[in-house]
Image 1 (tube, helix red, strand yellow):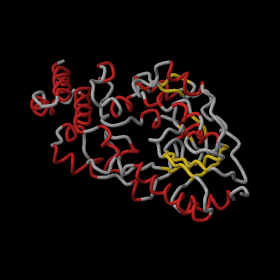
Image 2 (cartoon, helix red, strand yellow; image 1 turned 90 degrees about the vertical axis):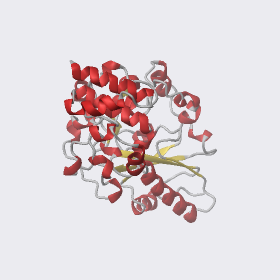
Image 3 (cartoon, one colour; image 1 turned 135 degrees about the vertical axis):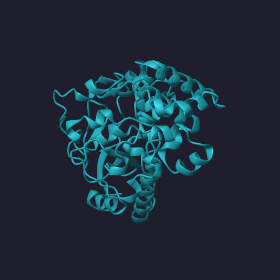
Length: 339
């Protein structure tokens, strides 16, 4: 098969809704890029990072004969006035981005298989064993910044990534990461309230509030981190908000990125969600990953960190909740109010 036309593939990616696309040769990733991070303990208890490490480092184990990794990016930045003070990270305020990017990726794969019958593809949106930021850098879409986020020139770090592996070559490939524009700036490192940014674009998940509020959903958050969770209930945007490269964000017009009703809830409302309200507000959003008790726990910690006195009646009620996780959080928050 002759190399595929990147001009055609770019047109196709734009037609299905992606704003950026790049192409990288499907060459193995040096093991140290992953193992040094894991061995330092920065992966916390995300054991799946190790379990499928071989596939992360060599996409030919996912798609035999892999030749090309196509990387897509979508801008998701919104500054809707009604949710500017939301305790939910911007990427999670609208429809679950996995669904949005997966729909576009599926449309791309269907079209390319129609145009090139017999071509092999493997697609992933975040949850698969692909190191998206590494491939995005190789494809020339940007670079991994000091805060560990992937930074593009047109959209800063307010982007979501998806990848498709092909068992065919294309007629042009990216030339690797774009120039590092972080320079000597250390604003993100200095602003991270828990010291999770350890340099070289690496993040210690154990200290990251995004990890603690999303992945660590069945255990207590260490107290030294809870006290930093003022108005933080799901994810954390601090290192992106202080980044000078994000000073001129581009508004994401697509309605799938528009905030849903849950983004208008404050931490008091989130802490007091009933099961019925949870089923009304959460399905179809990324917040479902935290689960019912985990999301309430996060919001309770935020109330305690803010020492929100008006929350006392709710906290007293939740200190007797059926969930040990929620009870413990409420009791801790009440102790914060007493100080």
